[in-house]
Length: 241
Image (cartoon, rainbow, N blue to C red; front, side):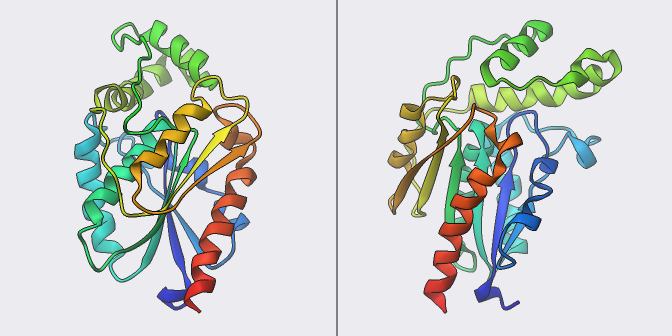
């Protein structure tokens, strides 16, 4: 398919998650949209790599890779929760000055914005307490932490992801890319009001969408997000035909 008739959707996972959360999306979207799950260091097939502990350094790394690989192609970004959405946002900031990269859109799902004040009251050194607190906040329980060997393997990346989140400096930066922000109606972690703050971070169009479910709705009802993504991206393609 001609590059002008195809949009690559680059998807960043939530803290503690891997690219596999997006592994089925290509089967559910139009063939005019190609999903590219971004695998972060320290998990799944990249388990041997040291995870990033600084979100801006991670953004530098992935912006370079994406800028090189997707030159002269049309791309969009999807991120879930703060880490996925803000990492995508920071990658976009770095790529905006690259004229060969055509960025169409950012979808920020169930995410605090870059200007949100995030106070999780988490001590990363108290591992069991940290795990329990994250499970309570997000509603996501990782059974692997009940197995000592797996807990030892996974904990460094889990802590690194939240270190990136906690230490990210609150800021009011903007991008010249349309943003669609998605909130879940029963999300007790990230409220609608917090998700609405993504409007402050774009100099282009902004839309706010409600979906059914809790904070991690994406794991059980990804179709809610996929409908929003497909409708938006196909509009870009139809407008260029």
